[in-house]
Length: 386
Ligand SMILES: [Ca+2]
Ligand SMILES: [Ca+2]
Image (tube, rainbow, N blue to C red; front, side, top):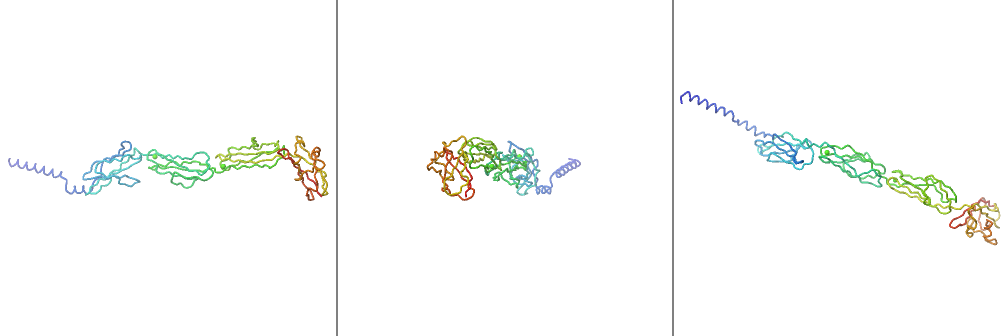
């Protein structure tokens, strides 16, 4: 090698050394890198097997492990620590999930967060649907209502209800006690905050039977024609049906009925309200056979002797129909005496002893009664007593 060639060789060697030196990292640059551990890059989120969430990322130089944080309500919450470069969260409920991954090492500590990854493709945008056990029928007592909510994706978080415009409360079971029409409002919220539109439902409660009334006398005269008007009232659910019968015969409300037989009648009203409560009213009415009587003399002066009561029967009856031993006037029996009752009855009259009666002065009503089979015949007259 000549001298010039040696110089040339030396130059080339120097050039190689210089160029290699420029490629070597300076010791200061390495220290800076090691003091600030980098977060993972290329972080991806994928949904696998329908409901598994899989995160993957690229390895980070000097990292000995990775911490996975889930972003919940804006806060990073540590959910997994791993030495690998992937994480599987299996069987996750549908919903929106966001994660960030940090790298760490025992000597360098923890890096900052990676970019946030979110499963936007699986986002739940549908509100839950709430159903109630209430129905449209009238109920007859305090009633427990239950609410059932379902959600398509992320699941139901809470259900709220309000009764008759009171404050909303969280819950799904409550009892209604107020009679009348209760208005119930309810809605649910899912796990990602979708709010159902408020639903409203009527819950109708009637705890009370209908009220019945009718204006009836205890006693009517045979042949009396009576207008039968009754009142069936129900303040809560209202009357659904009502019927009046006399001895089983249906009479329209406000219709007239003729008592054409003597004896006992059963007037009955049955009513039902829309909740199914039933009321029954019953009254026994006595129908008497009216007769007119004439007292002779019309003025009773002395407290002795006899006086006569002449009886005028309806056309359909004769004295033979009457039990003569049952004949009374103000409770006093007719005098049989020398003129037997039979003979008196044939004349359509009966005699009474004045002294059998304790009558005060003035106008006095005398009541004649006699039995006809199971029935009474009754007649009244007013006389003057001096
Ligand atoms: Ca939903
Ligand atoms: Ca009622």
